[in-house]
Length: 613
DNA sequence: TTTAGGG
DNA sequence: CCCTAAA
Image (cartoon, rainbow, N blue to C red):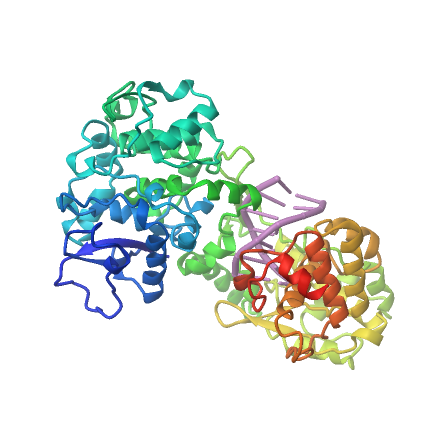
C-alpha cells in the first residue's frame, strides 16, 4: 500500500515519530554520503503523504544498501546530495492504485530482494535533477522530482553536473554506437562496458534500453545512437524522445516503451489506467514506477518466466475498496429487504465489482482477449457453470411424494424442512446458516436470480443427499460445517467434505503416476467416482499435503500428531511419500519455504533428501 | 476448460 | 473451500 522511499530530511525532522525513523546513513559509508544531513526512511502513501517507515522497512532497506554498497554511485566529491537518485533507488511501490504498473511482478522486488543480487546501480537510473529540489521533504518537491515530464525533457540535453561523477565509465566504448544495429552479443558487451558487469538478459529491447539509460544517465531511452569521446557521451543520434511537446503524449510514450522494453505485460495498461477512477495519483509516480520496473534486473525476467503472474484478483481489489462494494450491495440490500425475505446473503457481497443492470441482473465486465474495451456479460457463478456435483437423480429418488421438484426446492430453501428431519448434519447445516447463500428470491419472481438460487440450492441439497448415501464409515465425523467470516461479519459456510484417507492415498497415487499438475487427469482416472472432488479440489489438497509434509520436517520427532484441527492427521508415511514426490518433481519451493511453508526451515532439497532418505 | 495461486 | 486470472 505504500511506497518506501528514502528521503533526505533536515535535522529538524518534521516527523513527530522520530523513534520510528532511523537514519540510513549508517548503512552507507561516510565517503559515499558526505553531506551531514540525515537520511530518513519514509513511505509515500497513496495520496502522496510521507509517513515514517517502520523499523522493518528500515532494516530491509538497510540490507538493500548493504548488498551493494560498492556499486552505489553516490555523489561524494562535490558534497552534493543524492536527492532524487536516492529516492528512486529506494522506491518501492506496492500500491495498486498508485502504481500504474501494478500487474507487473517486478514491483515485488526492491525491498524484498534487497538481499539478492539486486544492483543498486541498476536500481538507480541516475536522474539528472538539481539537488536543490530534493533538499526538502515536502511531497511537492518529491513529486517534481518524479515528474515524468521534467525527467524526460531535461535528461536529454542537460545531464547536469550533479550526475557527472556518477557517470559510468566505459573505457571500452569508442566511437559511434548504434544500439539498434547491435546483436545481442554485442549488446551484452556494450552492457558490460557500460555497467561493468554482465547480464544474462537476452531481450534486445531491454538491453538497448538499459544501455541507453546508462549512457545517457537518464531515463531517456529513445536514443539509440551514441558517440563516445573521451569517455563521455558527447553526442546522441536521434532525439525523438525529447521532441515531444505534448505532455500527455510524452508520458504515454514513456510508459509504452517501458512496457514494451521491459517485457511488461502486453495488456493495455493505459487502458486499465484510464478506467480506473482511483488511479488519480498514478501519473505522478508513473515514470517512477517504470523506472523501478526497468531497473529490476535479470532476476525479474527470469522470475517471470518461471512463475506466471497474476494481477490482483477482483476479489482482492474489492476487498480493498469498500466503497464500491457498498454501492453494489446497497442496491441488493434494498431489493432483498423489499422482498421481505430477510438477510442479505454474505455471498452476494463478495461480488461487488459486478454492476447491476437496469433490469437488476448482475453483470460483470469482461475484457475480450484483445484487451479491448470490456464487454458486459451476465455474471455467472461458478456453481452455475457446473461445478460437478452428484447426480441429480439421487435426489429425485429420495423424494417420496409426487411433489414437483421445483416446489420442493423452494420449500426446502425456505426452511420448511422436508424429509430427513433427524439428520444431524442437515439440522446443523441449517442452524449454522441463518442466511442463505444466495439472494433470497421473491417467491413469484421468475427471474434468473430465482433460477440461480434454485440451482444453487439444488447443488447443496444434492450434496446433502449424497452425504447421506455415502459410506459413512470414513467420514461420519459430521460437524464439518465450517463457517468463515465474511468481510462484514456475516458467516458463510464452506461446504466442506473432509478428505478421507483413501482419497488422500488416491491423490498421492495419482500424483505419483501422472505428476502433479495433471489434476484433471487424476480426477478423471482416480477420482472418477468421487464426483464431488473437482480437479481444483485435488490441486488444493495436494497443496495442503505438501505444506503438511514439509511443515512436519523440522519437528519430525516430538509432535507427530499434534495437529490441532480435527481434520484427520495424515499418517507420516503418506506425508513422507508426498515429500518424496514433491522432491522428485522439483516442486519444493526453494526460496519461499519459510514464508509459505511455515516450519520448513529453508533447507534445500538436497539437504532434505540426505537427511531423510 | 484447465491450471495456478491467492484468499 | 472459494474465487479468479491465465493459459
